[in-house]
Length: 79
Image (tube, rainbow, N blue to C red):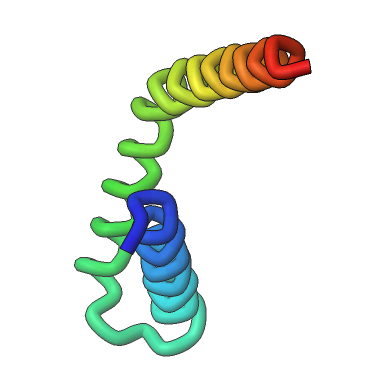
């Protein structure tokens, strides 16, 4: 399996788990204290990782743009 596909599958699994966590807190009320603690940990992680994720996204955009420029240059060399 490709790395990008694996990341997407993992992201969907995490999203489904997060939705189930919110449903548990809002509706089911099973193990409410650990659920709220887990929700707070996720929120804190999101707050502190936001700047790192923004840097990675910016680097990906720059790298992706550089790759597009290199591919265009290769096409021009062939012609």
